[in-house]
Image (cartoon, rainbow, N blue to C red; front, side):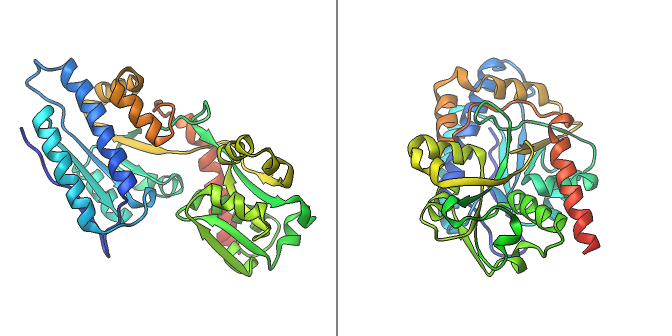
Length: 311
């Protein structure tokens, strides 16, 4: 039995989140219970080290993270006897270095970061994505209130914008449209930028005309319309992105337990703990990702990067 502690790879202050930690721990329980039961007689027990970019999560006190990890390691050691590690990174350069030197087996970053760093990764292959709304992709929508009588991007200049914190991909889509129309990027184009911690709060701000434009996902908008049909009547879509991958993770190509771990992901619904994790994560499953799944994402980010260089 060999359990190692959580390490935070950082340049500045560490970042993590209570909700994320709970989900991570449930994920480990589900994964390793499946692997251990299926391979109890194997001498070569699976070892997995995951590196997670903190862009997936928001900050809380580090002491809370340490307490949660202590509880988790005791549970893991008592039940499964699996060597496991989770590293959080607020510096992508450190994540890349640890991945390339074999210190982590699976890396996970925000979609935009993945496209921007993929050429710096050693041999790798895509791992798993996230299924929501029956698909492993999402669309970003630029929403406005119908009563504002806004029909094009030019009319939004100098207005108020609502965006979700740490939502790089939504901003890439918005800035791409602005640059295509020869405008400045959002931080100059809009006079007031309000950050919200959820898409539902952005939709409510639009509903009550607190902002001129909001960037949300199609899944969030559809959910809010189901809860309150008035939302669908009062808000309109000014522009919509193509379908893009909503979650990116990748294996070291030489990692030898890939198939066993991917099989465990595909069987997530087969255990009560796995179903509980899916419910908490608001996910329908973790399907394998292929290069074809990220082509549209790659095109979107590359076009934005090219236009930004020209301006």
